[in-house]
Image 1: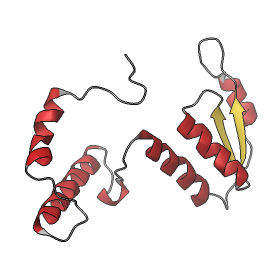
Image 2: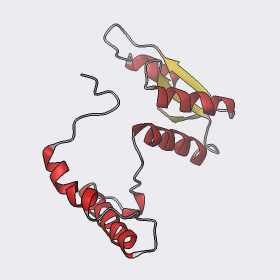
Image 3: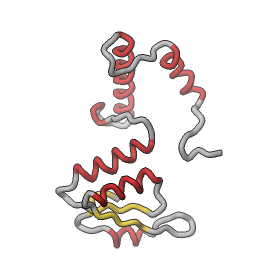
Image 4: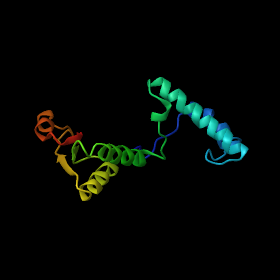
Length: 139
């Protein structure tokens, strides 16, 4: 089985989402009634998730998937903290979404340290400590 890019959907999730696939399928960014109903559902989900993790609803961002999320997080943190530093630490075996985001940021002037892993895929914590500088903004 290949669950690297996708995974089977739990039956409870399928049942909970069924109305939104068949009846309430509006685009939440549309101004018509189906769209507005969809927007209300999305915002209610945002509030529930925020409550579960003790966050503000404005801090919850929905993306189209893992790659978009990785890009958003890595680039967002880098750009938001560029006045504090420009150094990122990652491993050589990260998902391509992570590696490509780091490579993109290198072209924008950020410095990236790519740590090696052992035969078990683990990073030596001492190597992380050695790699951290006063310019490190993301590990």
